[in-house]
Image 1: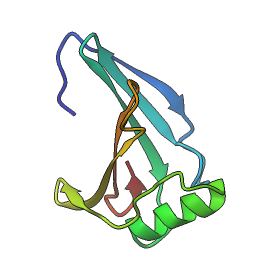
Image 2: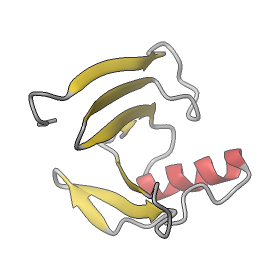
Image 3: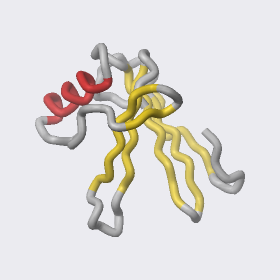
Image 4: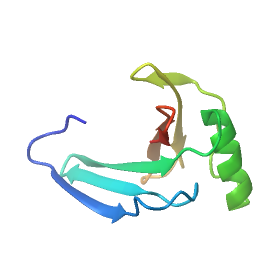
Length: 104
């Protein structure tokens, strides 16, 4: 993922042996004064992104992911884009997509 050269990159989660769909396998934290990106990688346990998002909502017992159906693409893969807490000063853009093996 391209980012400004001044941004720091670190891996804060590295659970690559887990196949549990709710456990983040790996998190890359990329950031600098202009902003930050957390790139999370989960194992894909359902046949499609929408089914995986529905499973995550069931497991969490909440509407963690307010959108289920893809509304865009990332690198040619169907993706779900939404803004969490859009009225807040701390709003967060969430983008989820799958390459068929993992969800990012």
